[in-house]
Amino acid sequence: MRHTHATRPHARTLAISLLAVLTLWFLSGPRPAAAVEIVPNKLSVNGFFDTHIAYNLYDSGTTGLEVDHWVTMVNWRVSPRVRFFGDITLEHGTHYDEHGQNGDIKTRAFVQFQHSDAFKAAAGNFQSPFGHYNQVHDAVIAFTTVDLADAFYADRQVGVDALGTPVHSHLYAREAAGVWLSGHALPVENWGLRWDLYAINGEVRDGRNPAQADDNANKGIGLRTEFELPAGLHLGASWYSERHGGLGTDPTLPAPAGAERRALAAEAEWQIGPLNLQGEQLWSRVESYPVPLAPIPFVQPDTHAMGQYATASVAFGAVIPYIRQERYRNRWFDDTYEAFSAGVAMRASPGAVIKFQHKAVARADDVSEAQLAVAF
Amino acid sequence: MRNPPTTMLPAPPAVPYPLLALRAVLRAALPVLLLLATAGTASLLPAHAFEIVVNSDNLVPQIGTAELKRIYLGEQEFWRGGPSGPVQPVLREEGDTDFLRRLGVSQQQLTNRWMRLVFSGAAYPPHVARSDQEVLEYVASHPGSIGYVEQYSATPGVRTLPLTD
Image (tube, rainbow over all chains, first blue to last red; front, side, top):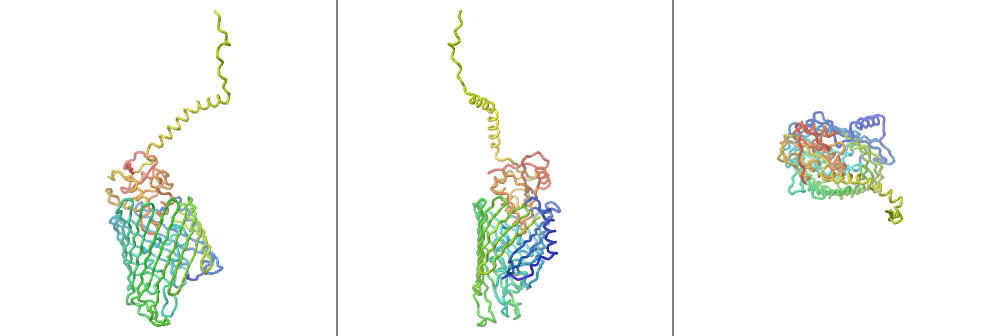
């Protein structure tokens, strides 16, 4: 369930949208992922902006203009083998604001030591490498659909607090502070292996959930591998586990000590000429999670959750029609979410994309959206 | 001496005017057709209509298409047997069709790939050049860079890199 928030297109939001669109449209130009090079090959600034108008996005019968992201990223080559990356994100209408607030500011920053293609080490705050798209920072210009699949990437109900209030979270730590090791190897010609290993403090934000709280007592570890096979086929798997520490003893908080979350995901992508096929499957479970106010006190509920999606798209030059089917199920709450999306993405230039999408949601309102994203 | 009667000579064959006209056109067009055929063959003779260029300090003797593809897709960030620093691929605003065909990727795929890399913070953004001259100037001043030009003109600090299969 998404949080309700204001959707009125007030003048300030509209003015900021238009100004930003015009500015970035001029900056973007017909170039692929170009950045503003402050010092060539040393310091660059890039980013993106996206806005959309939607019908029924959060409430029935509402039409809202949303300014979703305004992101500025900095890349600094400190030395040939040391790189700093940082970004500041201004979000409006964030999907995972637990307090119903309309805006949010996020920061991300890490330093990466690059020994070789086979081994890199980073420390800082980063989006955890889980699944295919978790690292792209909701940059809608980097994927075909209007939004990432809710069944996989959005926050879902994962438990209840001591008062029985639903608690929402991602099924893994979407971003966190910690250490991140990665590499890319070519064991056989035309075959590639990409790997990521990270140890983190659990999720930085949205701490009110059974197993994720940034109280420095919630440790997580994750692993991701991706096999690059010939003929454009990529197969990947992600695993994540975290355990809440001893600080969550406050009975009013939904973070009992010892609660453990485990998540496993499989992914596949196949590029066959202009045809792109992609899908992901996720399984998640919270263990050692007693519920004080359950009908039978301190019972261990079945917290298995499962999310999946499959997307197909065909590129006719700069016009890319697509379809997506997604499904989520949580056994504890018998929460089932199912949606089918169809749309078209049109790349006005390599730095600007316009998308139209209609999403049919089972047992809920259909959502129609038009979106504009500009990158520089 | 009597001249033979002219009526004894064979009469020239009567050629219809349309056939005469066609023959004239073919005769006139033959050199043009030969020229076009030669030109077409000549354009197919070289393996590619672009040149790979690197900094003259780069001692890599040659590069294969597979490695070139990995570099331009951001999958290989460091030289093998070349400069110690990272590879700096120079992209073009309008991707050369022959170059992209050689790599087996479309301009759309190349753009999407770099979008994902850059917005995930996984890679330093590549330099994008607008012309051959800009490619040559950038490569001359950056030892780890690699680019491609449609027409190579000798530039101090730049050399061509043989492309193998």
